[in-house]
Amino acid sequence: MNKTAALPITQLEQYLQTGQFDKVIELFRQMDTAYQLQQARLETLLDTVNEAICMIDEKDKVLVWNKQAEALYGIKAQDIIQQPIDHFFSNLKISTAMKQHQQIIEEYHTPCPETHVLINTRPIILNGTAVGGISAERDITDLVQLNQKLSQTNREVQSLKKTIHTIHSQNDPFSAIYGRGKAIGAAVSMAKRVSVTNVPVLLRGESGTGKELFARAIHEASQVAGAFIAINCGAIPANLFESELFGYQPGAFTGADRKGKEGLLEKANGGTLLLDEVGDMPREMQVKLLRTLQEKCLYRVGGNKPIPVDFRVIAATHRNLEDMIRTGEFREDLYYRLNVVSIALPPLRDRLDDLPELLRRGLQYYSALYNKNISKVDPSVMAALVQYQWPGNIRELLNALERLVILTDGDTLGIEDLPQALFSAEGLKSPEISQVADRLPVATAELEREIITRVLEEQSYNKALAAQKLGIPRSTLYYKMQKLGIVSTN
Image (cartoon, rainbow, N blue to C red; front, side, top):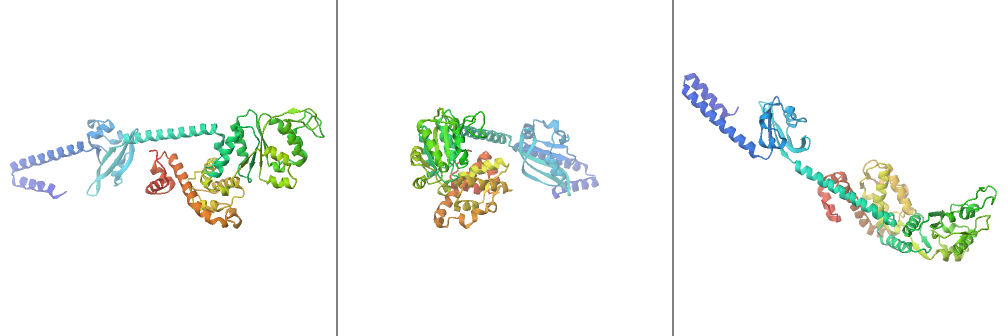
């Protein structure tokens, strides 16, 4: 008890001992006036603050319940005063703070459904003992609900964007070809222009550069009614080549199907025929194919009846057909028949600017395939990818990414999981280190931009959650967004 409170008690004892009862009465009047004044001040204070104020005693009975508390919870003071608070609420922060002698500062709390508050609460201590507790709760329900609505709206916008992208992708067969660099852009532009025609196309490029992907896109963009038939000329044994391409009549040779067989060229009628690795086609078959293309008809093995066929021809090769013509391995007349329009597909080492997008899309695909949540890439990984020669091109890159995703345990791709081939002396481009050094900052920044943008979209542009998932301070996220030109939708 403080000195101010002790003084009237001391005086009271003196007055009672000396029989000065008139002074006792006067002192009681003064104490009552002081009490009434204190109560008026307290009630005014409780009704002036914006927070909902609650006070309980050591038995959890409510002692104070101000007007803001009445408005927030819809409970009148006369209905809750002197009642146990747990008759009205569960998950009580005020009771927990009192019993554990702890204070809670600005903690988010949902005392009841559809009500959100920031709560401050602490125990009331008298002589080292908790004799009650007091709490002040600031209503943030409107803010939380507004944020929920904004988040929902943003998710709907993102979903709409994905839907629009899907529709756009369905309308644009070339959307499956990733990359925005000049080299791949020129190839796609040429392919789009020839797709509306019926002229033969020769796709040239190293293994793994996406020749079949281009051929399928050209076929789909042409909107022909027939099927897309792909033939790998290097995978068919020479002695079966003719029967596979041209089909055969019943009983044409020993072991033949008694019903005969339709060849791949017949199946392509009205559609598109891809002759993949056309440089591996046996020379004797080149003559027969050339005649089919010129006369628009074919003869099955063992048959003498012409079968009309009309299809779009797309040939693909990684070999130098001009050298093969000089050595007599490839017919010059067939070469000119196939090479009306030639499209060169660039190797991956010549389109390093596309690495960030290829990496991002590959990670999205394989992360979903293997149920992983990878949001960060160690900068050393990008450095290794940029320096590597990629002899297997896109196919090799996808294989490396699949390995990375499988072996990564956390949310970050690390260089320790890269295939060993990416570190070998043969795989590095030491003569072009200066070029790599020039491209590395651009490629790294592009990858960083892609990852940050994706995480922001996943978190509905909640920067606090995005920064937490990225493992960086929020201030760093703001800095990187400004530096990389990332515009928030919120």
